[in-house]
Image (cartoon, rainbow, N blue to C red; front, side, top):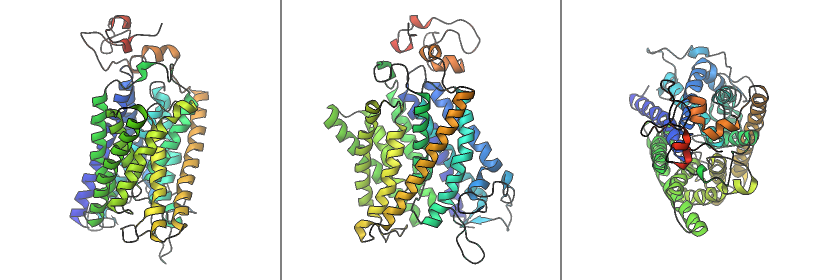
Length: 451
């Protein structure tokens, strides 16, 4: 065991956990004023559900002994984390860190992946239905896919016995472009189709972001935490972590510029929302590639991801798909761009040691990256659609039209984010059941109930 590596991974795990509250701010600021608490609650709900399931059987399903074909670890092998709790001289290690530290680091990856999906269903999903979906989806989709991508093990004879994508196929995904971003983006698309459009989608100006400083704060927290996400995936305080760190700086910085240029040319102005979204798009794209590209190629990837994601988010209006907060346009598209770009520009002298097309590697690596991206996207979309459809047909996934008009915060959580002068955005006071001012008396037009 190396204490420096252990300390770095523990710090990185804390940074990645911070990303989920950061995401809550990022998404919360992009919603209406009467939906911000629900948006944040879905992220915090993901923390509760996923952390408990991860300790119970999720880690074992993702990193237990492969049951065959690189598809799933044995969910019973390390049930309740049995077998990884020894803290003495015989403590099991993953590389140079205790396995229990690795357990925590991977747990926060699972949490943020589930939380990312919520942006596609803002303002209209029942909280109980979302929590049910989160529990089922993480168990049936994220845990197996994490095994596909992140599990690297060998038998006594040195034969690979890990996941079929990372170890079997040999696709490169350093920190989760497939397992996290494509996975979450595909599930988000499925749920957006299941729940349908918000009332007034594309027409009601009240659907504009209500608090852009929240969005900027959330993007900053995400970027801060992302250094733990990517550099922490080196599982050590070493040069590989430094390599990933500098790429995690360069790519999103370039993506901000790429997004803002598209906005300026298309709309005539660059926006704070665009800057924040561009940074996240660049972070998404560099996640799988941060150990495979040189910093110069990371800048190219960042510009490309920022521009393509800025273009992609506008497609939802043309296609009529209400991906409320652009999860598909940023995470699915950005994840695909970053995953495939490895096949083009992977440097054989990088830590990942892959050889992309531009370095004379031909199409082999690009083909592997395409198979990995496609497999995760199809599996996640199909499973998310099936799970969402069943929930919708049984307990119902969408709130009523009246509750949507009144505001999901008050209707579902009995709370309001903004209680100015004793007035809330609902028909009752959340803390004591006392009547509050009727929404029609609120000075903000966004707080009024539709006639």
